[in-house]
Image 1 (cartoon, rainbow, N blue to C red):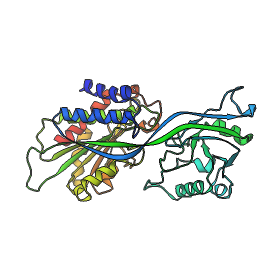
Image 2: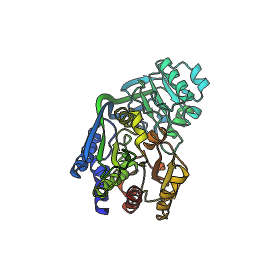
Image 3: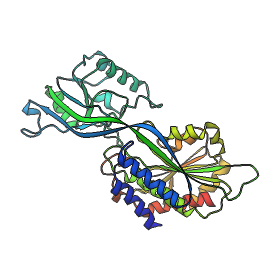
Image 4: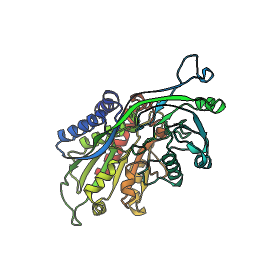
Length: 397
């Protein structure tokens, strides 16, 4: 098993690498997963849906004020935010740090420099159902005032490098280091920002593989769902998030292939967990809301196997009388620790609909996820194998 896990992890995180929604690498990852499922004799459905892809050739930020530069003649460091439109603009900078300042500021044709309260956390996408009043207020103000561009430091949260990542937000946006923001606040000056990037129509695909039940109990048809997402955020090889978990999903498909079970098995490789539109919505559209009543258990893997942390598991909607069995099984893996429920992954599509669910991850993984440092070496194949063994035992008994 270790050999297969290593091969899958290397293929996804090293050979294919960064695989954001709509990209050629994302398609290559979907092809790889689908071909492996077919090779195991599973029935494979490719759930294709429209999405927006994005590519960026570069970003440049310059100023005529030599005192603002890090070194004489050097441009300021800057990175285009995911899905930002292109721009080539020279304008004055208007700093804004609060919602009240944003509401009062004249930003038309200027570069809005957001900091402080406004960037305390990333801006939710316009279509994200969990966005809050703060998100709506910021988006509404920016769209109403039409700045030429937006600059912001990385949010102070550990999981995100960029303030925005929304294909529906038609305002050029870029990230600058906190030190550059401080320089600009101390010494405002006109800036020249050029972003060579653009969006394009693309497709994404969930890859759903199915293994039919060997026999049917009297109470009727059921299916157990095992899942992991294979896409990444832009600019990360996504080893922990989430190539390791996809490797585990593929290993489970291999090791459960010959096991006779009284229920169908679904192996779901979700696309687009990181950006909208999420692959979960396409899965729900095709499956139908009523079908979720037929799922006795959904198991998600996201961020498992961090070399610097122990594996974790959380449970959702599992009745006390049914929890004893998975708790006893996990108890045989002392390095796997129970944690409080968390919503930020594909299991929520099931748990929000009342489906009993387990979510496997690893301690510390989400402090590394979404960053360029999320590389092959950060994943322990031994810890991946530990989750595979535990999940297999939960499924097969």
